Image (cartoon, rainbow, N blue to C red; front, side):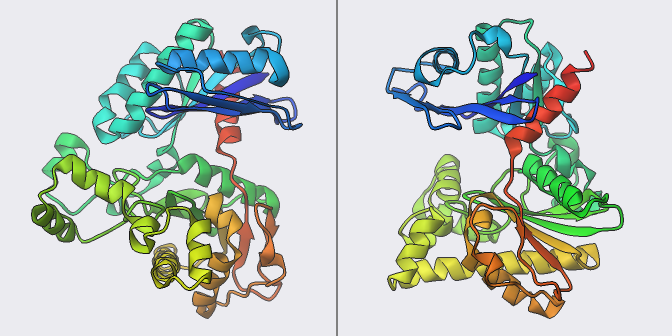
Length: 399
């Protein structure tokens, strides 16, 4: 079975074509600047590439570029779209409506649409992607939606209810939802495979640290708490997001600067975080380089990240009543030995010991703690696309 995995943003479309016989990635690519002008690039695992700047007015035109890349020219991997058996979509916000991956129906689409207010940039774009897929592939091609918050739906009310008037939860479902759930689910499942046992009786913290970042506390294989909230803004410092900040600090800045709600949202999501503190970049690699060159604000940004990750991990150890394993994943978690080392040294009171040689890896799967460490520490590269493809296959095979 060949499955096309799709992740649509408001002006972008990422894709992977995966052959589930052996779970091999056949091709992947990105359409960006949709509705602005357009840029497309696609590649295959054996190094073949294609790239162009064709105008992309909408997501349907973007899918036509994907079709060309998959079926024609240098990056051809299939003869026609008929060889694609199903399509799996990443959906950021499923709210309280969706706790599992489901087959796309008109009712499901209406449900996703009803949640646009909770994720205006994401859910609206996901719907565009679904509609564009149906236009290009036809209505008979099965499509599945996988919700980014679904894995966190096991949180108890004491973890997901915000202490604001309860009527806002009743009226608008204002609560903690959490995100990166597909990544957290993949990593925890992979840890179970590494151990050769279920996570029953185990206490695990997964640290998805990238441009967007979140931690999850997992007990008996189920999430009991996570750092992101009603949107992906909450938690700790990220690439350009502020994470959790005293709300009064935000309203104070808003009043002093005369910012509109939209401008305030832009400030918190796009101008804060590593970028806002360092003044250099939202990219961890740039900030690390600047810090190494003596930039004090860049070093401060790194110090804040290390401190806040440590603080949240400590809180989650308390929430779990202990911890058996910590897993680092995503762009920064997988590729920053210095961050991993710093965080684990800060938590050494738990009996954590890191093997410095093992910890030098980037983007590889490995246990980086010593044999004497009381907590096992792993780097486990995430694979959200494969998780989406697996869910899609499971649902389609039942049709």
